[in-house]
Length: 76
Image (cartoon, rainbow, N blue to C red; front, side):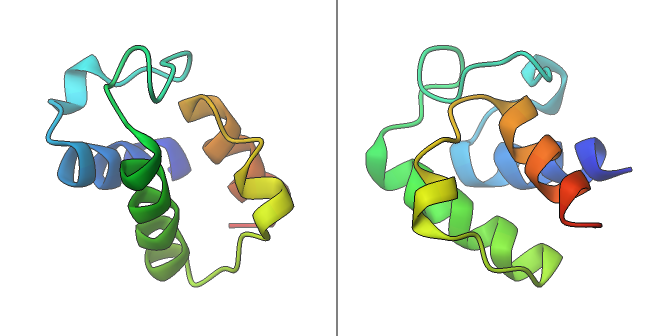
């Protein structure tokens, strides 16, 4: 499932326990991601899912659900 894979990537990139990562988690407020973390996270997701996330889409990503929704809409 996409969410499970995204949780693994977020846990690895941000050093957060997977059970603390929810679909409604805010990347910065709930998970402590700063702007550099967000860039690294997007890059890790692009690599893992073999997808390109355009900058205009990446700037819209604020929550875990934003990542999952983007990937599902992209057919991943």
